[in-house]
Image (tube, rainbow, N blue to C red; front, side, top):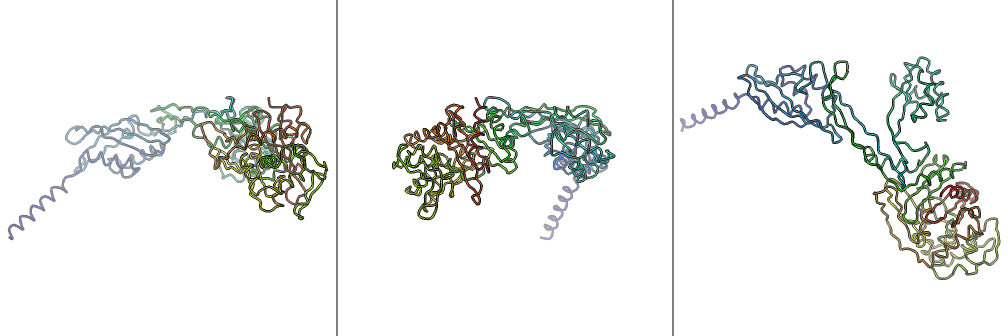
Length: 596
């Protein structure tokens, strides 16, 4: 038994010595070196070479220039080159991100030094054309972005050269004098640029860095270049950007489209890799891949209609909004706000305001749909009326029309008539009618955040009466009222669309209102223009619509509305604090005059 145990120990000992005395050879060294290099362990890889310091410096610069997301390596062959050396043929595949790859073969020797094998270091290990004192440089080749087009193929956003005007304080000398010269030249292009804003901006910029004074369209840059080009400390850089026809064009929709489609319009960037010397001068191109331009993005917008809408809202000093929708398709044709409205946010699409008497189009539909009245039913239109003994409802300036048909009460905008009609309405009648026209539907329009409005059921009689003429708790956005107009014109709710190929989702798909109930409403909306509250629109074709004045806050001031349609063009205008509907109707008149 003792002899057997001794033999066993000897065998294990001999076997163990054989395993641990066998040093890794060229295949193992090659694989280990490549694994460390691929993992980003530059120091570990360099330590496996016969010149760790040079290897580490070169590999760090190489990876630093490429900033790779990954590296894959493949050993193609290891061939003996005498007793003390082998040559490894390998393939590097650098993943440079954005679907960019740089793949090439290279070779290096693995040599034995004493009892160990090491990678013989030379810059050609990293790339066969890399020589001492050289590194590489990666340059991104960016394609011009694809244009964003309107429904007719006209550019809404097009590639254009943009020049950045930069100021480096430490190179400027007298910063105040340079700032004044820049402000004098650039101020006429952008009123926000003043000597003070420039000096303030420079003061907040870290020392040695450049402060961007302005980003100018190339045409604007060329116009001021003679005044600013030679100024001390002023530098320039340029790039191609997607720009609208003018600074304020489509501010509520085009930035959203750009953001939504930024990957689609950017195309696929190309790249080139070159060797550079110690001074950074390019020596030789190693690889290049041309950029791939993207395809144009098509939208439902109309540049002509958008321009007409913006020209229509621009003259007013109050925040003014216009939204236009094509009834047959739901295409969003225009979303326009003037500067005072832009300063308050996306009022056109998400602002919620009492719709005033524009709501009477919905109330008229609900009343006729109930079967209790027709357009010709005689109804009282007193100067004021009391609802449930609690609420006095007046007409504008308490006008009194006596007893008149419903269609005339609509045309004259009798609050008292519609308040009394609502008293006998079921709580859900007005909300249901509003929903059938899209008011209260929530849409997920690709690229946009939208709110149509809300018409809650009113069990309280006074509240129901106020809702009927657009006060109470009823709220609507200009987008929502444009959709109501489009639904009346079409006969059912169109689903709004903005970007071609991007489907809009709706949380509800309400049934269309009965055609027999809608037709009288359309006729009444025509009467508003023919002989009612919007005669300014008579020169512009078969326009149908409804004016609205909506009190807000403490009731001292009012917003002015108009919503309507002409043919396959539906729209809503809103003038905040317009006091009457007249400014909103005048906006509509300017708009319709400019639209073919």
